[in-house]
Image (tube, rainbow, N blue to C red; front, top):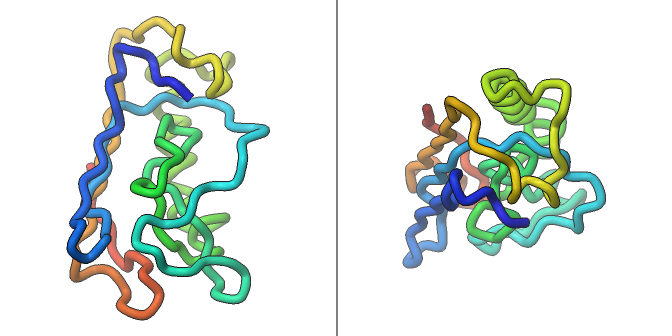
Length: 147
């Protein structure tokens, strides 16, 4: 889905030599994501699914305006991604931005965000992942740093 012009693109940096994502940054756009297709496979090519206990995890959540592309996807522990600390972070960012933007009672669907007017203030999401923080067996990031 198209982001509003005022929000710019989500910037995804990666190391092509080892196929690992090193940072993701973008202005948060809280939105609904119902009816979306399954996420693409992780950029690093590591397997996911119930047999591995790993989900396809967005570094910047779709519900926060993140892109649904491989360069925003990493393997994440199913619990961490669905109900654990990472999911809690996604929800906190979503709720904070919705409150700052005055959208708490009127969250747009992702298919509608391109026409939304710029709020007075915006919320920036930024995460860095050091190459040394990736698990060599599962390809899962074990540490995230952000602001």
